[in-house]
Length: 377
Image 1 (spheres, helix red, strand yellow):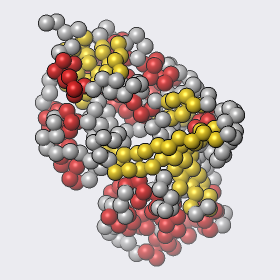
Image 2 (cartoon, helix red, strand yellow; image 1 turned 180 degrees about the vertical axis):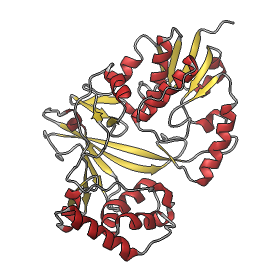
Image 3 (tube, one colour; image 1 turned 135 degrees about the vertical axis):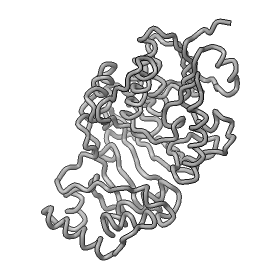
Image 4 (cartoon, one colour; image 1 turned 180 degrees about the horizontal axis):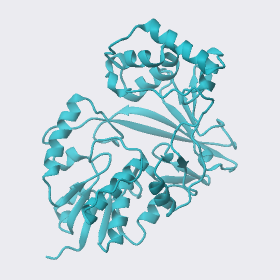
């Protein structure tokens, strides 16, 4: 029986959307399926009170790649939003990332030399030469005050365990700026799609067949029979029926609240850095698009242990899980009619610009036999 489509794309997140769009532009027929009732994966926005709510957590686009910036802006214009989060430690407020504003708030120092001296004195005080865990690593990089107030509680909530039980490699470095600059990202281009991320994913999927609310694994053979090749963006261990065991993730839970006021917290993102507050951050979505609606929506973000009935957000890239994933990847590398891509299929955390760059690179290799790099992603 002749296949109905050239490509079946399992998952309508950014990777699947980009691949489907580029394949279609090359004259290929694509069918995109997703078990959720909407497209876009985790960048999906839901309108509440006239506000585009990032339903699965804050998504702030940033890249150094002009190619990727021009690519996303060809579907929707991005605004000039600059991410400048605030940290709340027991009611004390600090600017992020760690910069001269933060150091003034911590120690009342006013010059880079004073800030460097303070950090060095605290690092020397701790005398950590070979960090054995995350706590020791952080202390060896930024000292006691920054670690205790701005890193420890937040990180322990994020990973669900004590910092002394977490491997040092989770924090390879901590960006410290000796300028008064609250811009969280160093990237040249940064912004939010005007009208929300659905405009980006809808643009990518324009004219492409999409079926929602369907589970690929419930009728896998039937779906596979519909296309010559599969682009799989789901959990790679599930694809192989968990033959080497389950990969671990951290999950998230979101609690959305509507407030009958125009401005609730004064900033898009506020991090809560003490462990006794169960959520890691609150997100006031209207600030992403400089909204002036009479009401506002604030989301609390709660990290959770992952179970198979929850969404998988962050891979746990420790030694055990890396060994398991490498066994799955060896199977994937031998597949001739299946392309694995994206955060879950590659068991790798990606920012949005990175996942778009990865999909574009895969497309160029797959269709054009080139190895074009898409800028400094």
